[in-house]
Length: 295
Image (cartoon, rainbow, N blue to C red; front, side, top):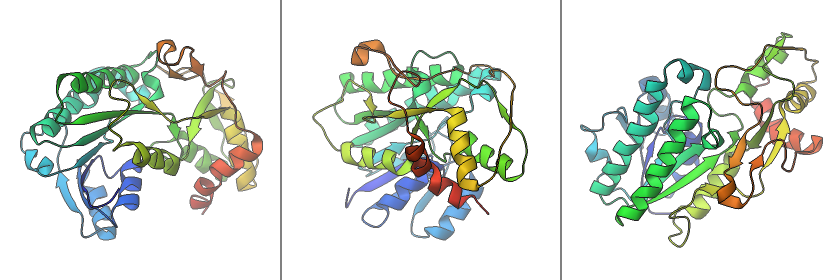
């Protein structure tokens, strides 16, 4: 992607910062987010980027941020499952109503493309976070049926390695400190994907007008791994033993995740019945994250 005017909403988060890193040299970037501290830190690294401090729940005073924008990347969300279970209305206000605000602003300002970042928790959801993301998926795809000014692309992600709030970072800290890791269930499995692989997939598909106007985009050939094997790989890379304690599933938590509905692919693809990472693949998948957080 080159010579585009790009607005990244939630640009101070993991995916947002990776988008900036991949795009800033050949495009004009602006960022809209609500964390002034993270903006200040990011501005030191990218002083030529335009920053807007605002909340997607109320974009009335930020419509100008969408003026003359070619592409919007919407990667802002509330996403902590257990927290949102205790306050589900907050997930609706941000993840659903905030997303509608973004969609309407894109259409008003003739933005050509808008990317929406969803989650595997939107598939057969049992928690407020997953339900809010699943509803937003449907809303964005419905906009594609009702207007032609903006093409909305919906991307459904697995667990992205090293994302903000990731349990993997927590596990690294505990293993380094020789502390017991709390595990909700020893049988748990999850899909895993490197951040850069997610970014590459978006940039390869965002400007393609010929497909996925009515379907969710899913990274091809995803693999999964049991959580204990992931922890074992982190332990191996840190060259430290680990111990764990089973504490039981948290509110809204699944034992395994599903990546798609049966009517999307003809079968349900779950993290316990799909291709699994080998030990060697897991080590390769996790080594950069561990190295960056080793000290």
